[in-house]
Length: 208
Ligand code: C5P
Image (cartoon, rainbow, N blue to C red):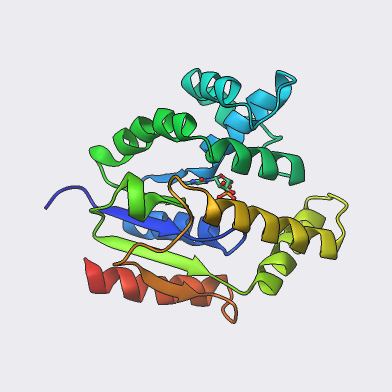
């Protein structure tokens, strides 16, 4: 068998990152947070004083992305969230980031989390999880996370931002947020991180 690819897709703040990281550790696989790639592109466009919806600027930023861009501390927060989602709707940006993601998993396998890993990046992945939770629960988790980082936030505004970003990600023509036909659905609304991990491991073991 080839290298094992585990695709973990789903909407914002569903717990994909925490889950994917734990799966990677448990299975001894490299982990890639693909949202970070779009965040870094959005950040570079904002830094240049340009509009993240500007396709030429965003494509140039995606093509010249360097590893150091992913280590920046300012890639999370409302501005970065929306800039990432805006550049992610531009086909040339997605095309520019595709190779990096495929090469990352090619030799040793990987756990990747994102929106289109199971549908576009690795359509042949043996394991595809689509992780969801109610929008209220996702907003609550994001609010708690922001507060934990000392970021002032308004709960209603956090929920509105999550709704907007999900709508933008699900309605874009290229690589929209949606479960692959062969994805296993994991609703974490009533699950804590340990329970979500345990449920995901059962799904993974069933597919490997
Ligand atoms: O996962 P995260 O919330 O960090 O992703 C930020 C944004 O990047 C998403 O809202 C989405 O627009 C975009 N994204 C994407 N495809 C991926 C990962 C992220 O379009 N595979």
